[in-house]
Image 1 (spheres, rainbow, N blue to C red):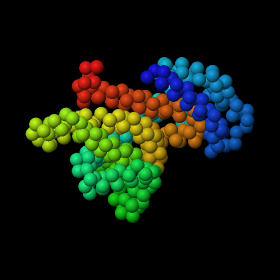
Image 2: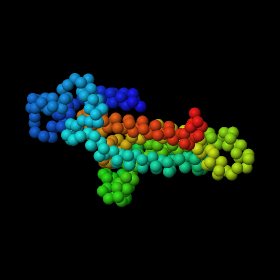
Image 3: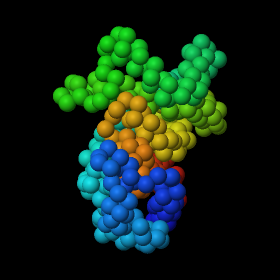
Image 4: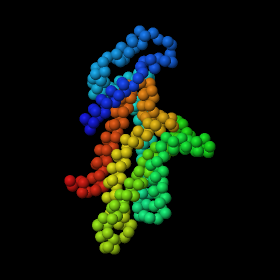
Length: 302
């Protein structure tokens, strides 16, 4: 985990400095016209005139002390901005995963149990659309239908009261869940079909054990391992989708903060948001590995 975080931080720090544009000039573009001497004085104060290796060493040293630096754009502490927006991103991402587990997982299992029927065909058609449709386009369509034409749900921003918050969460969470809905449905079906064809399942049927008990007590736990692998493996894609979805729906999360920081060339904000995203992905994969041992006792004994 530690070498991975170091590598991600180094690459991100280098790439963001390769983007054309001066953050000081962008920051001062809406204010009075400044002389080149004033711009250089501000760059010296922010340490932007130092060589890139010196800036990187200073960044890592401060990071080890728990200091993420000061935002060039807002002049506020970067860690404060990230911590302020992190709960909104977590709520959006977790809600999307819950939607996937509630809809895609049962649909894929039902498709496997009803293989060859119209239910199977309908489920696979739904999965095909889920995999093929771009999430941002789907989100815009939801905004047009449920926000503008029907006026049922808010399209931009975040509600203040609990009810308004829940209503404003519907469209972005449904849009973000589309990234995994089709994939998890197909994976659940194929994994369940594979397990249903194993010898121990046929033996359980031959002994007269009930169909429901065989399917859900014995087959399903073993079928969950590949499904959890797909969900944890796609968590990075989910966070990447959250960056776009938050911008489309005006959701005040880390993803929107990162996009705004990229356009403003706010180096420290971009680097630290990517770092936070990376740590979240790593921790999800770690939790997934731990969860394996509770689902399959054979892994616990190894």
